[in-house]
Length: 264
Image (cartoon, rainbow, N blue to C red; front, side, top):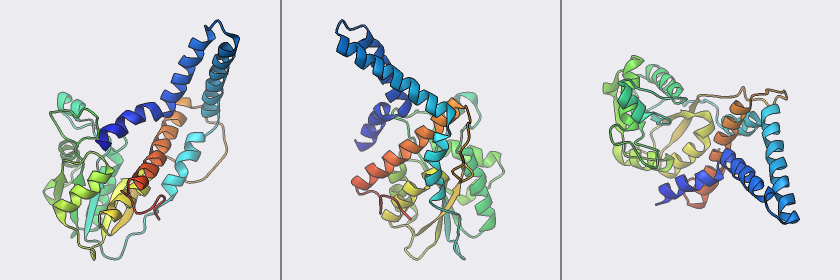
């Protein structure tokens, strides 16, 4: 139930959707016969234009996502017992219909996962991910796409255990723990996008994993530089990703799914 609720609520919380709704409300209010409502509508319209301008001109997306990416550095222990990689944006329907595995930013996770597997040849390898869609595609799971992607980059999938029932980060941690039963004394590397690492670390620790961060897929250099990108689409994308993670951190903490609001 919480999974469905989170997906529905995000429709109304996504920054672009909020701004679009304000713009629409402003235009409707502009047609009101009452002056007060027209002024309110005009304010909404100017506010949205102001926000769009700020997002386009300044690197607000970079500034928002940098704290998330900087939270955990790659500092592996001397001995690694296992490596777990989280699914992300595997395109199950497109992969099925096109006959080839397709993913977006999560492709960088597979490259790093392969690198870690080669660095620690004796480690257990696990992929976790079923479907993060509100209405999951019936043909393939994220794990199925992941297997094909790993084979495409030359990774021996016979070493990998695939968990395909989880639908969010909380379930990634819980379902995979039930599958592989990690011991408290075992050291596991957790591979996921750097911006997603704080929430993932919190969930896996809460589920009893002794995990170390192996972040990848960086969007920023990690500094708060001031410049004028004039790239609205890029900055809105990063702002949306960051806002989603901050909301997720708060929600997961309130639900008791993580060990801390801002894991460290």
